[in-house]
Image (cartoon, rainbow, N blue to C red; front, side, top):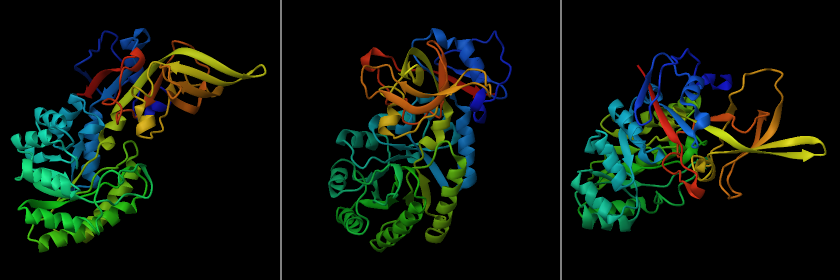
Length: 409
């Protein structure tokens, strides 16, 4: 099945198998994506289809532990809040980075322990803080004096984690404009305020930005955290938690290994004390490669120059208001593959792919090269598990994709 071989390998499939939605379908060996699509008869479906291989999560967890054994992953639930994803990661032993009452509830229902959850949203509604208090979620991230006063009023028993700004020079989604205090000017003042109110500060956190390409940013941030730890200890705080945030790649393990080497070196230099707990907030690292999205072409247009069709346009049953919101809001560059038999003589054309809605912004890809396809043909998009599922909406009446779950036995 052409270039999907790096994720899925074709194996024989029992024609009597009927895959079920809402349940985990088992398979032996490796997953046959083409066989699944044939068995489900996607051509008769109105919705696009997510094919989720839950076995990918265990492989990614093993990769994480191999490269950063000292850093415990706290999965960023916002990245993909599918209950089966959260349950699988809880069973693997991951902690959870939660941003709201509902995310905390989801993690707890999946079997997470309260001490394995950090309430990492620096701007929390009071009612969500009260829920965290009820559920004994102790660690809470802050980056302003207003949040500290709020916690003093609603949950003074909470353990504070000071988030400072130290973002990458190049990142897919920079976060510093919205979150993180100034490390040099504000972090110490926030600790002093917490001290004066009798609150507990247990550590610091940062986020270099989602999709970070400036790897030394981790070293700069960890060095800054070390200085803040020293100041916190001078104030009498038991500084025992360092949260190095997220930003880890989802489908490039070589890039991840490079980042991990920098992080490990920095931790060995600035935080050699094994009593300091190091956590991170990976999201796309775990789930991006677990999903492949299969879409159907329902309309076609050709842009001609004279008698020659220069560009082929395809309109499919998912778009930027659905799974491909990641193109607009997460700045993802998605890739597309076809289901035709590979042939070195198969001519390919410059291709533009549109979503189904009436909005001209609903453009998915404008510089792909695909063979000549027809209405009713299927195309697939790998690595679609991050920042897609929880954000998709049925705008214009086009339904969000269905999901088939698989797990190796």
